[in-house]
Length: 255
Image (cartoon, rainbow, N blue to C red; front, side):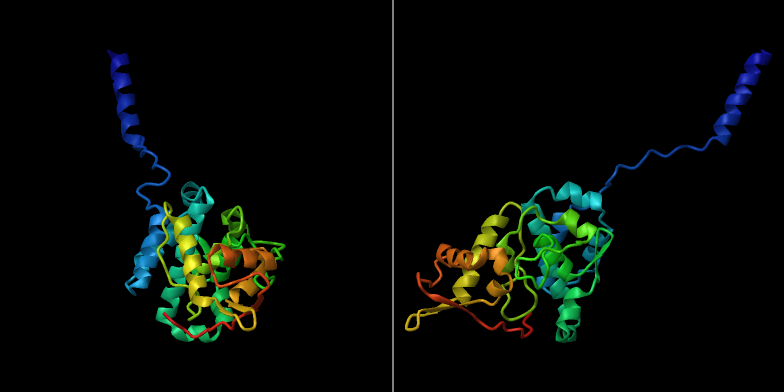
């Protein structure tokens, strides 16, 4: 009896003194899907509706969340194009005067994504252009890319991003909400529509006038031959032997 009583006392002491251990949380409990957040962000930004909650959720993502959600270039294109366009519009609607100092506007690391502070340049030239130097015409890679940008970068450059990214200028392409299932078709259509609006031919002088961005990022398009192929592929007004001329870019703010 004494032995049984002793065991009962020991059990009682252990049950009182040992705290209940909570079950470990799953790695990503009820966390929103990153791509869905990007689509919602650009959609609300286009309508000039509040985005603070979405910005907070995007900031609270983790690199692990991005690794799970962005497993191929199509998903990365959707996420980062939508964020770029959403961030740009949010900033310029709030403070349009910032556009007067564009270098600072694009280089300022003001956007929080998965715990990382990013600039619009980081997203465009680091992640989407696979760590290319901004002023390298598409031929000069960054020697020391940021670790986050390198991890998130596309596996290969896709020139179609230049017909999807909207930097706030009048010469920029329109803002769309890109979707994973249709991103390639959306980019093809954006490319074709932009070239249809921006390219024209002077038949009397055999000159074709094309957007300035084809010059800024010539290497992304495959050089002069790549630009000619692009024009022909998209039924732009171009004939063999035509001389290509680059139009001035209209930086007038247009939201």
